[in-house]
Picture (cartoon, rainbow, N blue to C red):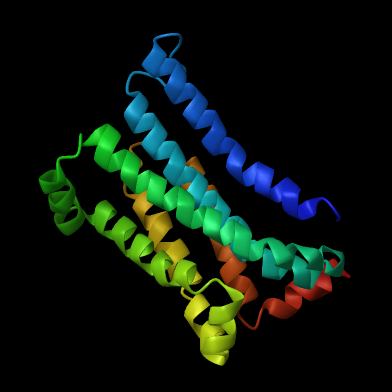
Length: 201
């Protein structure tokens, strides 16, 4: 477990490095592996990575309960949570810059009127206090309230999933996978939690 934390950091940052490399290739005219609309592709991928990392962050507690040897994962939870916020910010920036061309009137129209954008905005706003209070100092300052505040991550995951679902046009398989994973994490927080412990024995 010695290299677990740096390994997870590398895994979390690798998609960003890949996307930046692909963007550089597109801008330099050397290659285009991002399809007909590179800006849209980058924006979508950043949002997808944010959702995956959010699910991974939420899965740490169930995994620790089922497999005590994975307890060191807890030390990486804050780092993964901050990567979630980073990808969410970049997702929004890519949408504003690469898709809308900094036309903030369209951005506001989308956020205020389109259901998928409203769900995404709610998820993003929910992430802000979690990122700000992710430090040990805030944890000591808030005490028990810190845990209650960070339980917002569950409705945030639901809002992020809805944001993704409402943009799917035909293939719902990926959305179903996200729903299953989020559902399992939420199930762990119910009385059915005993099932996870029993199944791990």
